[in-house]
Figure 1 (cartoon, rainbow, N blue to C red):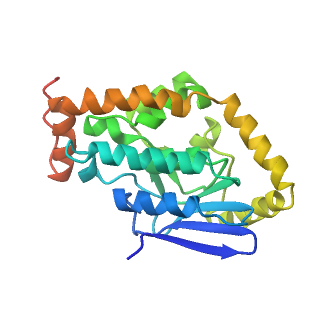
Figure 2 (spheres, rainbow, N blue to C red):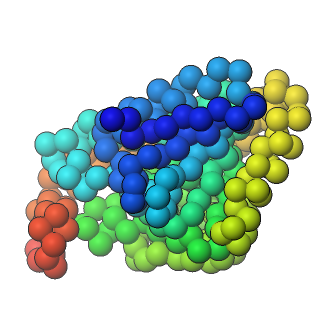
Amino acid sequence: MSAVRVERKDSVLHVVLDRPPLNILTIAMLGELCRALENVGDARVVVLLGEGKGFSAGVDVREHLPETIEEMLAEFRSALAAVLGSPVPVVAQVHGPCLGGGMELAMAADLVYAADTATFGQPEIKLGVYPPFAAAAYPRWFGRARAAELVLLGEAITANEAFTRGFLTAVVPADQLAAKVSDACTKLAALSPSSIRRAREALRIGEAGGLDALDAIEGKYRDDLMNTEDAREGLRSFLEKRPPRWKGH
């Protein structure tokens, strides 16, 4: 059964993470997401959103373990590249929890609209690991101090806090979120597709560093971090529903 649903409405393609309640991202699901984003046809805008209680609570912890980490990193990187390299603007429509890899996917979108009840965070450090793409892109996009706070403390923040810190395009009441996104899509669809494409390319040049820096960071994650006892302990303790016992190596 597909975990990514694609719906077309006029010139807008809705790509829906459909693995409720929290749309935990598996390797297979990330592959589906890539295929959906690589086949937008003649759509003028893509809206990325989640079914159920939230946008996404991140990548499946089971697939962070050493035996699957390389495949997971590759698929997640491909999904990020599909968002960043989409031929049309990508708008993230966020409600509920938007955590870990879910937040990284949302931040890769061109515009990010959130319900005032949404929450954001990169909690990976609490499992003894860290978010590679956030470490690669957030310091340049949002500032070193804001990036460090998210990545090093791992605490969730409210939508209003995320907006104040520059992570979001706008925050609206939950019952107005769909209408706000629809209005933005209408405006984008009315503009020149070729000009929009070139403007997005110019913006990507301006923010260059994210995926390039990710090469080195992913290598360190895979070859260094995932060989430590604490990384394995953090992930396994989560799966075993117990507090982690850190060893410091």
